[in-house]
Image 1 (spheres, rainbow, N blue to C red):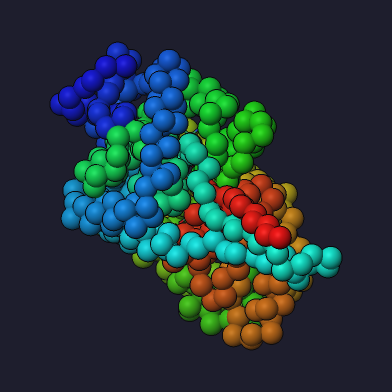
Image 2: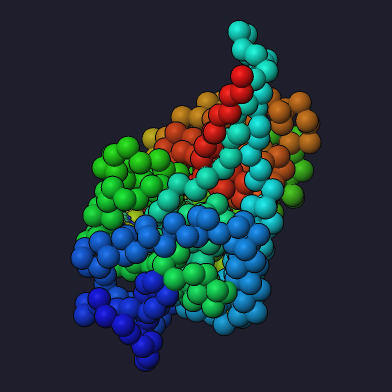
Amino acid sequence: MFKCIEKENHYCNLFNGEWVSNEKTIDVFSPINNTILGTVPAMSKEDIDKIIENSKTSQLKWGETPVSERASVLHKAAFLLEDQADHIAKVLMNEIGKDIKSSLSEVKRTAEFIRFTADAGKHMDGEAIGADNFPGFKKNKMSFAQRVPLGVILAISPFNYPINLSASKIAPALIAGNSVILKPPTQGSISALHLARIFQAAGLPNGVLNTVTGKASEIGDYIVTKEEINFINFTGSTEIGKHIAKIAGMVPMMLELGGKDAAIVLKDADLDEAAREIVSGAYSYSGQRCTAIKRVLVTEDIADELVKKMLDQVQKLKVGNPEDGCEVTPLINTKSADFVQELIEDAINKGATLLCGNKRIDNLIYPTLFDNVTTDMRLAWEEPFGPVLPIIRVKDMDEAIIIANKSQYGLQSSVFTQNINHAFYVANKLEVGAVQINNKSERGPDHFPFSGVKASGMGTQGIRYSIEAMSRLKSIVLTVD
Ligand code: NAP
Ligand code: G3P
């Protein structure tokens, strides 16, 4: 590891307030046109050891810094991020192929997230608990329970929100007094390093945020098993999340993983509204969102009408270059596009009705909609993370609930109906983190609790919940005679 000066698009890691690199680098290409965007360092295991040591030492002073001072740094970071939003959104668009409007919205939403976190952190009070309400105890005992940091947080973010899902780990961890090591997604590291720059420019003390770029296939297992890490905050696929949970040992963690969010449409739904919400929920950023609607369960009596309205909406989607405001853009890489194509072919071979799509140019997959998907098809159960949506016809809401709950995933679901009793009947029975009534599935607003059950994860995100997860209650007990 050596000091580096960023030039000719060679990006560096933040280590103890300085920018550092390594002899070995990784080329980052744009998914839009395969042009090279820059290189990032491939940090070694020895580098990681030094970084962890530094994060550990730096946390001690930061943990004792008054919360109001930590909040000021976060407010400054939010201001700087908003100020540079246009530039950073363009970097993001080129690196992950997200349309420019959504890229800008990711950056601005992140600035709001950081600002809200700074304010929320100031109100995370502890409490004083008397003993005399517990049988057998007198008034002479008091527990002073206060929130203290955990130590070093390892934040691992996915490619689809490299700014937002990095900041949504970093900001709550920092306000709680932890230091953070950010391991960004390799495809997304350039955007994430821009975010690190913002925190440094905002006056974050040296070493309180360090970054580690490098292919997880080479350094991932090493970093997650370091015993100095006090908490792992991971967002990504279920496969990798389960792997980390297995090897990391007795370290607390939050896992936000994959999903197969169902939209359940009942006969008393407003079908125009349902079609609009479902199509936008399924195809924005080409379906590369954990909360994308990934299957539709519709009762037979209204299926024909819904399908027609959905098809109308899908045909209006703009497909192509993210710079031109297209919602459906090239997928992150060839492997992902091949996987989506496999699911499409499986559905066709097993007799699903192809309504539109199944057209591919390199990694660009045109919005694909299937009717009459059945439960023997892979598309009924697997997460494509691409612009393909299966419609499964069911006889009634109970059958919809059974199929929805059969999934290994349990992130979110939507139910579309104008009947509040039906809405709550379905919502209460679904095994998911959240149910949206007459709305597409989505994480925001970001202070709402957001969590997955079953293979969709463990722990709860959302500003206050994230601060709670990355701090602990420490009690000091006073006894007087
Ligand atoms: P991924 O392949 O699981 O990678 C996620 C992150 O984990 C990347 O930074 C990756 O680094 C790193 N990683 C991979 N192997 C690792 C290991 N052994 N140890 C430590 N880190 C490791 O996921 P993705 O393709 O980026 O994201 C798509 C998936 O994320 C989808 O399944 C989606 O549903 C899910 N997701 C869930 C949520 C949620 O909140 N529930 C939100 C967004 C996305 P490299 O890039 O270097 O491999
Ligand atoms: O897939 C990322 C996730 O956190 C979802 O956010 O706003 O797209 O629902 P959103």
